[in-house]
Amino acid sequence: MDSKKMKDAGIDAKDRKYILSWRERFRKGLELQEFKESKKKHGGERREAQYASQKVILDRIALAQLKKKYKKQASQEIIQKKKWEKLHSEASHKL
Image (cartoon, rainbow, N blue to C red):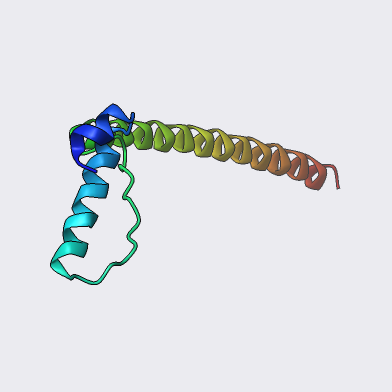
């Protein structure tokens, strides 16, 4: 079956190329082996830079949120420490 007949039978172009390439390998006597079709990472080669820049932005946002959370927690600890010191200094003066 040639490409034209496969097209008329409704076989997709990608699948036709795959079938024809394996048929040619078989005709040449090469050992047949199964290989997995690779999947595009991050939308393919053209979108790789866009994905990388978006990842940098998201990483920076996450880092800023962590810093904000840390500063808030640190300030709360300082306030609690001051309250504790004030409470204990008043208690020691009463004694």
